[in-house]
Image (tube, rainbow, N blue to C red; front, side):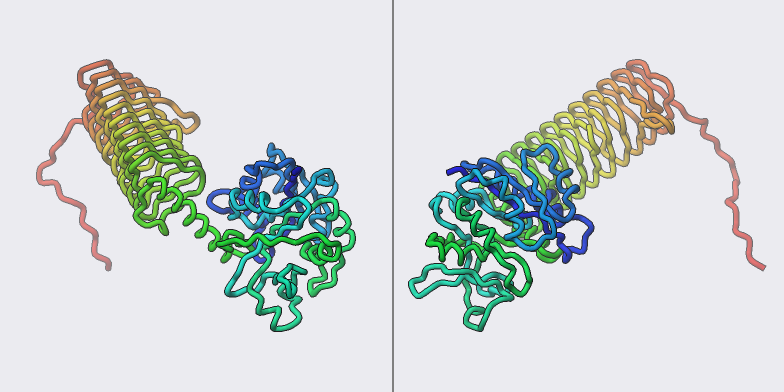
Length: 458
């Protein structure tokens, strides 16, 4: 079957109370629409992907620049039937069209593929669910033979019998294109909203002798939509629960799945453990036996085997070598590489640093724009002074260097392998290999010195 997909993404989302178009609202680090596109693009028989825009059209197109999409503009936003009609010229050569929604992000490719596979090409397919509380959803109308004869929108229910129907329309439809063109032309806004409903094609299909087939979702929450911030938060929690269950079944250990968020692409090896309140953003790759402590933020990082990240550390855009130990309360900024077995301890910040194998910076230091060799010891309070007010400069430190506490290294600077820098030194010139470099004022002692005393007020 030649199948196109149309995603309706024209709504303003007034209830979101946001200047951002609704389909660009964030879910797990990505726009709502991106989740829908990702599921649709993986369908086995997809020909073309169409997106119908309205409010914020330019912002949406800009966000998805470079994607292989056909854009259509719905003028006036007069309902779902009008939205599909806006894209009809694009899918006129297809045999059928799958209609999705840009604010319904949880539908999985497997679900949509099964829906397509079980719906014959000459039939109209509807995604349905059974809800204990059907309020807000269109009710599926069936005749005495249990055949679907129409859909009644919630606001248009005629009596309590219709309102009590618990089988509901979840919005997603598969439509045979040839008769659809005629149905779209015949739709009328005869409803409480004064809109052109796509769901009215069901009654037209029945009248034309086209069979209507329901595809029931076992878990209707997969078709949950987003109309306000409360629903967005609920969908976020559903999404996080679903992906963490998948990862745990693959071997990830999580102390409390309700307190871990993964906002991007996440992969891990065997026997990895995430403690509570861990957040992973962007692309995160963990090796084997990685332990991540409570309150850690990982963003765009690659972590090798046997790394331990202690609580409340922030690691952004870095690579951590095997056996490295980070934190607690450490901050690793972008373009940093931590070597095998290296340690970065509490209240240490590094930025654009290469820290060699087995090197240690365990306490209260700032290291920026530096290459630090293997086996280096960086004492507490050490700073690489890399910024002169206009430009950044690099510090090069060789292997097996010992840098005493509270030292300042004024870049650009080279420290040779095996050198020792005494505590409290300010180093402004290159340091040769081996030997000791110092920069200290002589210690003085003043006998019988008295501290100042605050004068009493008159």
